[in-house]
Image 1 (cartoon, one colour):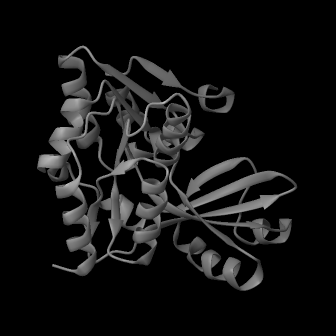
Image 2 (tube, helix red, strand yellow):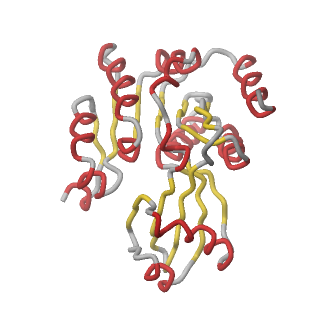
Amino acid sequence: MSSTDEKETKRLKTMSKFEGKLLGMGNPLLDISANSEQDILDKYGLKLDSAILAEDKHQPLYKEMVEKYSVQYIAGGATQNSMRVAQWVLTKAGKKDTTAFMGCVGQDDYANQLQDCAGADGVLVHYMKDESTPTGTCACLIVKGERSLVANLAAANNFKATHLESEKAKEIVDAVDIYYSAGFFLTVSVESLVQVATKMVEKNKTVALNLSAPFIVDFFADQLATAIEYADFVFGNESEAA
């Protein structure tokens, strides 16, 4: 067992039983963000105000951003960020330790950064760890206030329903009243989403789903159709609903 796993195990063992209300399950990513120029978007065929999954042609983008711009590394992933913001609001209302998040990360420094950041915000993270794949990243290119997002899921793409069999995962799922997921998770593990959503429905609890991006609706329609059957609330914008 690595030192990172030992620290995580000790942290979970010493932590009191989770009695929060909100669970997010999704793709944990480390955002690599930079104010950039239109030429780099043109080079990689990117559009502003859009979010896509990285293809092979996009792989050099991340290194080029680091070399060309002054980048910021920010804990990200749509669902994980939603849990962080939700916990910030709840903490302001005097309700600490109310949110939890599950997703898959690598066994690396990026994963440690994500866990430290989420933990500092009061979110309990129970990551699945993939020793053979690096933690996912998301290129955030900002031009005149608008963003283009390119997600390289890496380890985030390897979340498995078997992680839900861990004692901590069972404890979290049993405790919460609301389960939330961004549509991006539909590209990873519909099985996991359905497993948690089914338990929520059986106990008359709440399931919320975000469409997240037009490509989810366009190219993952079957997965979306499966998930939306469980949803009490569906969030989307005009471009996703068009």
